[in-house]
Image 1 (cartoon, rainbow over the protein chains, first blue to last red):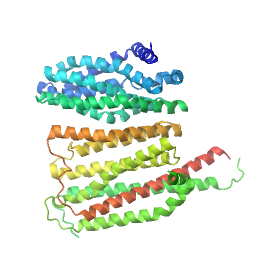
Image 2: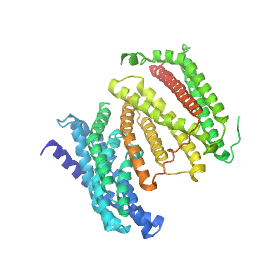
Image 3: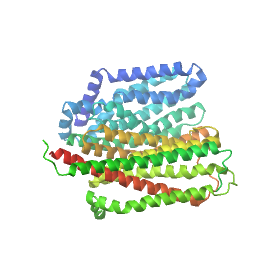
Image 4: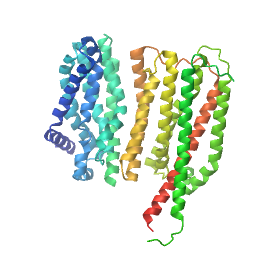
Length: 222
Length: 52
Length: 236
C-alpha cells in the first residue's frame, strides 16, 4: 500500500477504535434533529422549511466533535514527529487525515440524513438535494476543520477555540448547502447552489492541506 | 448648526454616544497601557540598589 | 523590501512613530471635529432626513473594520514569508481595534436600520458579513491568547489571519447570494440618497488617522513591555 493509503487506513481504524467517532457523530446528529422540533414545535410545514438549515448546522457540529483529535493524538505520543520525517509530504499527510475524518464522520452523517429529513417532514425532492449537498459539502467541513485542528493541536483545552475559528469560515457551506434545499422546497432549480457548494468544497480540499501542513510544521518546530 | 433630529433623535444620539464612548474609551485605555508600560520599564532600568 | 526592514528595528520604529504620532493624533481630532461640524450644520431637506447622520459614523466604522483586517493580513504575510520581526506585534496590536470598529459598524448599522426598516436587526448582506467578520477577529485574538509560546502563537495567528483573508471574499459572496435568495432585492446599504460627501470623507479620514494613532501607541507599548520582560528574565 502506498504511504498515503497506509496512513488513511490507519486513521480510519484509529477513529473506529477510539469510541467509534462515527457512532458519536451520528448520535449527536440525531439528537440535535430530535431536540430542535421539541424546541420549535411540531408544525410540520415549519419543520420542513427549517430542515435544510438545522440539519446542515447539526452536521457541522457533529463533525466538529472529533476534529480536535485529528492531529493531537499523534502529536502527544510523538507519532506526528515520525510522520513528519517520513517521505510522505505533510501536505499529503494532512489530506489523508482529512479523508479519514470525512470517511468516519461526514460520510456516515450524509447517509443518515435522509432518515432525519423524514423527522422534519421534508419531501423526497428536497431530501435528495439535502443528501447531495451534504455529500458534496462535508468534505469541506473536514478540510476547513483540519486547519483549525492543526492550529490548535498543541492546546490542551484547544477544543474550545476550534469551533470559534472554523465556524465563521464554514458559513459559505451552510449558506449554499441549506440554500439548495430551500430552493428545492420552492420548486426552483438547486443546481446553481450545489455548484457553488461544490466549488467551495473543491477549493477547501485543495488548499487546506497546505495551511494544515504549515501549522503542523510550526507546532513541531518548537 | 441644526440639532433638530425629530423624529430620529432616539437613534442618532445613541449611535453617536456609543461611538464616542467606545473611541474615547479605547484611546484612554491605550494611553493608560502605554504609561503603565513606560513606568514599569523605567522602574526596571533604574540601577539596582543591591537588594538580595 | 529593504526600506520595510529598516523600520523593523524596534529602535527605529520607536523613533519614527514618536515623530509621526503627534501629527496623526491632531489630524484625527481635526478631521473628526470638522466632520461633526459640517455634518450637523447641513440642511435636512432630503428623503432620508437626519438619519444620514448615522451613516457618517457607520460607513467609516465599516470601512475601518475591513481595512484593519487587510492591514492585519498584510502584516501576517510579512511575518510568515519575510520573517519581518515587528509584523507579529503589529498584527496583534491591530486586532482589538479592528474588532472595535466592526462592533461599532454593527451597532450603528442596527441603529440606522431601525428607523429605515423597522427592526433593530435585519439579516441583510452587509450586517451579516460584519457579524461573521467580528467572529473572525475574536478567533484570531483567542488563538494568540491560547498558545503560550509567543513565537508559535505569532505564526499560528498569522496562518489563521491569511486563511481568514482568503475566506472573506468567499463569505461576502455567499452572504450576498443568500440575501438575494431570501429577501429579494432589499440590500440595506445600497440605496443611499445623495449625502453630503465632505462630512463623510472627513470622518473617514478621522477614523483612519485615529486608528493609525492608536495602532502606533499599541505597538510602542508592546515593544516597551517586551523590553521589560527581557530585563526581568535577565535577572538581578
